[in-house]
Image (tube, rainbow, N blue to C red):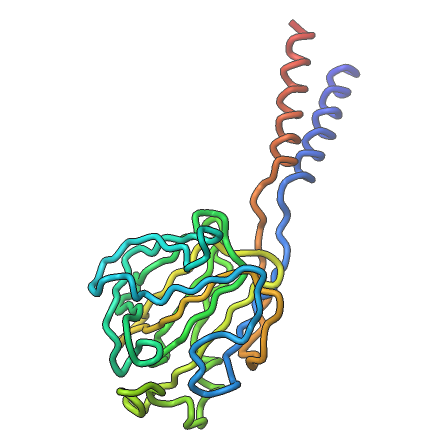
Length: 257
């Protein structure tokens, strides 16, 4: 009996050690800012160690697009867009009033998948903002942040300089909706997938998708600072710890044979 309980105690210690090695939930901070240096700003004021921009100029117009881009980083950052619609510039979108822009009209939306490598910054020119525009950030399949436009709408409400398209030849058109560049900074981790969706009538228009690893957050005003709970992916230490438990079990079975 003593031997049996001794073995059970050893098992308990090893399992406790393995549990300690398992990834623990921790808090990460998302800070969201919008550019205030000029109401018509269509790029970020943040600074980066690595940064790239997708302008959609090389993508043909149409819906259901799937393509891979390196955001002009020479391969340092890469992602695949899935189920994207690309439109020609009009009063609702198109940075600088020309070229192409990204849009979705559905609650399914489109996604940007970084293939597990991830970044800690994402920013974009959000044009023709409405209350049904949603963007969601994930890591390893876990939802980190579901950003609704309510806070941003409240901040620019009454600031006429943000309303209406700021670019010729559409300047002043669609005067009932604001246009602003929005920045998302993950201050304690990274994200590897982003989903844009339109939860109701209208569309979710955006351009100048900017990705990277931020150094400073620039001069934009803080829309919100949100603490999220995240579980990091298992590392080699976890696998080693669990492997040790299995190895110990096998060794004891051999000795008892």
